[in-house]
Image (cartoon, rainbow, N blue to C red):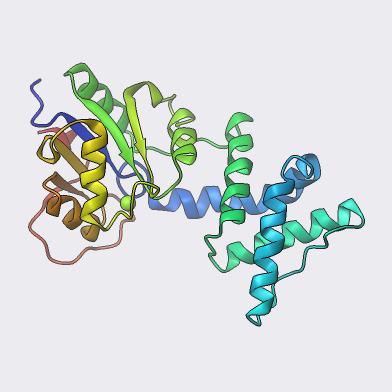
Length: 243
Ligand SMILES: [Mg+2]
């Protein structure tokens, strides 16, 4: 197979993976596991708990009813308050550093224990393999952290896919709706933007990548919200994104 690109750059949610995986699997797991995780690892995550404490104090200063986390006292009281703080933030869809860092560690333990498996649509492994065997590269660009990306693909349903993936990018490279982020990714990969084909389900991301000069395919998967009018080629599988 001759590929019409050098790098296949993939979004995750709505492209390789169902959007509901994050909301129906990962978030409920973190809510369920947080108290036990803190009981087992409170001392090891003291820095993350301190961030949660500061975030709760900042929320309270804004008039919110965020649970306070005591700085000292009975261990079980600190564990219970920190767990309540995590749940409080998650109910409000906060994206704070302390919450995200702790969630990442909870998910890492869940994946390692075999209690979590990364969802990927069934056409994904074969398409990744086809790209690599044809001499191309597969890379990921997602708003989830690089660590979360590696965990998802390293513990994917049906087996690890990390062997097919040669690069991971998250929003530390730049926001997904800005052309400059895609220019930076192409530069990091050592190729012209036109040699990269980006697949995403979000129109604003497709437009940003196209503005940077990348090839673009718009992913339509079960559960994806409808997008506005556009002129991008639409694909229902990754296999279709290779032509
Ligand atoms: Mg997406």
